[in-house]
Length: 376
Image 1 (tube, rainbow, N blue to C red):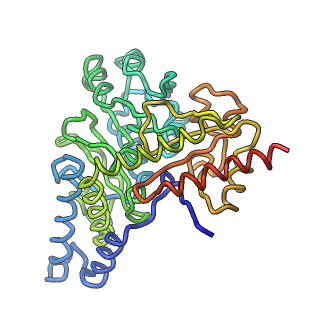
Image 2 (image 1 turned 45 degrees about the horizontal axis):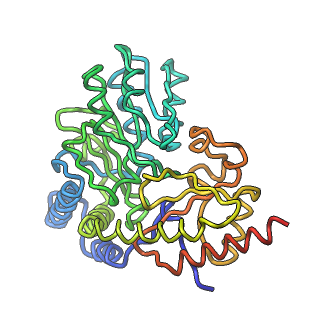
């Protein structure tokens, strides 16, 4: 059976070029980059090259980029690090539709005495800089707002939010989870205005288990992994040289063809919406100005998991929301104020540049067939 993989916001297939980079590195650069002999120095040299490549893709000074195990570690390190750095202040402001690795982290802070203020998205799916500004006061510890929402594709204006924060209280730092934006939008960390930015590899055709953080120059966070002193003491532990090279390779490829990839995916999104436009019972949950890579729909009257498994039986792979939520009801769609019926029947379709028109045709045929069969 032909397969149509349309769950790229959950994870992507590793590109052959990236896999080769990692494979070759594992065989040849097995030295510890902290070792003083030639094998160690060779590994350190290549690690530094990978950091430089990645920093160029993030438009950041290379000394501000730190390798992590992925988005969840980066988000946890940002939230707990900012809370510790700013522990005299007790208000934390986040968007109501952050990734669970942010929301669950701030819930833990709430148990420690922090006041958590959640800002709901507007009708356009975006977080309003004005509302963020209205919530900031002299007791605000930090703000965290994601750049692109992982279920809707809504794009937040992080630069505008950063400017609003600076006007209201210039001491308040901003963290942005850029996992779904990385490799799909230009990411100018040096001018964005956020003090901490987190990205992940497995959303851009690198392997799972590697990501990175940008921490603004002269803005120190408490070390989030101690021991060994690696990465300027910010994250201890022997660096995974091969994985870092894979992340850098995937990022380099993504940004070298950014416009072409976006155009390709935009055409697929337009084709999908056109073919679903006359399908009774299908409602589009993603805002019109969403990033092309994510389309959230509801097939009203058919529960998400039932339609999901029907599509799976036809070789089509989508999701019912964030993979990290393990099928739980979408807090993102709830934050948007959608009805329970639409939330219960929601599907997230997420593209990559590897997808084709045939994938869209197969998906639409599966949905229409599912409506006929499952509505009975």
